[in-house]
Image (cartoon, rainbow over all chains, first blue to last red; front, side, top):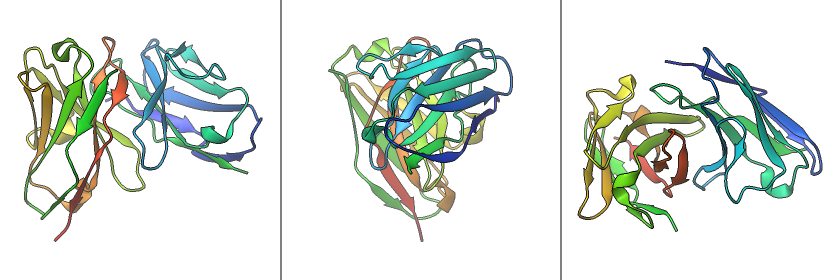
Length: 107
Length: 118
């Protein structure tokens, strides 16, 4: 199975900050990578697919980049509703593994 | 709009089985795979497998092979996930999620809490 890692595992930020989360795959996955946002008590929300494509309805302050093994999720101007945990997922091959998550909380 | 509505919370004894259902609406049921993902307390997301509602073909993560069964009922646009031989580590919120053609999940159910406790 492809192993996904994320860094950092958690960090504190302020509204208005630019934040970047990194995701790395244990082998090349081309651009078969998605990013999800998860808040307590709510279903996961798809943010980015195909590494850099913004899901319909997701604010443009979210962006993704990368291919192969290294990927990033950037939030250009952090809003209060963005404090959450973010997961990457590869869908290059079964099983479709997730990263361990990155928790973004309020500084 | 796409909606996935899951069945309610369950409490089970170790060794028992649980069946969680997921009713789809707002799109053509047989056009998209449905995935099952779980999140144990304080843990991350874990992909369990998927079912193709069109032919009923399934793919399971090796970790769950032999313990999980995913089925579909096209007459009610419902998929179900049954997990057997439950242990305390199976306590989690279980989600169904619609798969886009490429494989990522673009719509999710509200989640079903399964608690395994003696």
